[in-house]
Length: 257
Image 1: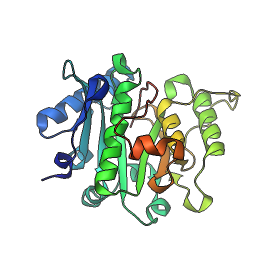
Image 2: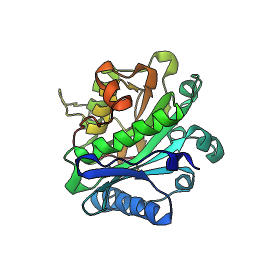
Image 3: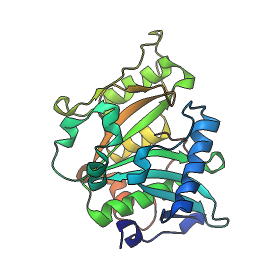
Image 4: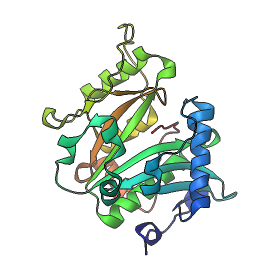
């Protein structure tokens, strides 16, 4: 029995999560990704699917009343990344120093939430499913690229990166290096910015920022590498993320790869 089949779905608060078991389930996730990344955000990528999807688990949150897919993320396990030739993040950053840490890694990406369901409960259920997976198979590290939408300008993106790097950076010995640097913008950075909710959620859990962002023109975003050492999750959120049957509420969010 596959790992995804061993993890029970959950149905509190009008939503439930499950892992894709067939092509129909995966198509539902891909359709949602297309709606968010291409139709809404205008990513010039043509088709919202790549070769890595075949190696990933696809975690889907559905509204219980309609069974409509309202949120999803794809998950690359440690073993699947080896089979795929590496993690997605490695295409955007040199992450060798992070991967040198002992333990097993889990990567999330392509996370998205339908516009009408960004009130918090759907994304909370997504994190709940992710936590169940981490518990079920004893992962030590969660990694991923959290995106900053560049439609709001390069100066805002640079200001956000400045803020989070000052707040919770990885130690210098484990910093990542972007393969495509973000253009500098005008240099007139705003004094304060509102953090994207996915980045805020990572930071609340105790994740560290890997270093400067990578420019991803295919999605029109600046990607920030995030690393969460599961053993060092913030005590305030550890009970919800790894030890509770009820998901911790998270803010409504438009998430990217």
